[in-house]
Image (cartoon, rainbow, N blue to C red; front, top):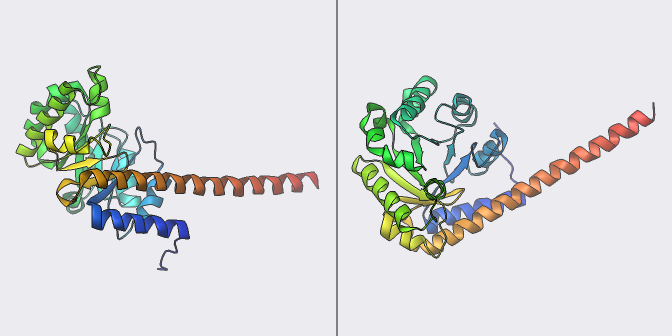
Length: 260
């Protein structure tokens, strides 16, 4: 198999990713087919771009998004899956059932398997969610503070939201489940998130930082946001190049039709 040839811009982004990993505690990139609206093609491109540097974790379209699970594990080979909107034990059962039906046991044992805790309903049902046997399959809970705060009509840094996130974190960690917190995090409030909620990881839309691997969480998050911006800029550049290529092909076809 031929080695992949990266463009200059792709190589620059790979160097940024290496710096994030080695100096700032980045442990994964997070994509999503749900609210993030990432296509399989885009996730595959990012996965290949980050090969040998960072694992890719993807938030799927729902607890039982079987096509997402199959495409992401079989075709693309991502290292983790997160199910959104798991608000009840039943939702967790549906997610775990889909995983067990599609992903072989040895592969499943190596993956990050998480749920999003992102509504007040999930918060109220969290003890029940963790009490069922299927919860033993989980090794991560991601707290989406944006949606969690909206579900109770509060601001993302409201004391009630912080208290809910802290309680979810404590209960998950007591079960040996790692917790990542995202939503409304900035370099200026990252330290407060760590001190008050005490998660194992914090995440932006696409970058996951391991708390214990970051020498300065504020600076790490600043670097994470810079990387995320560069990733989006490269995506736009690639998209524009494809659009220009399609436009040129369209013009060629029009000329050929006119010549008939």
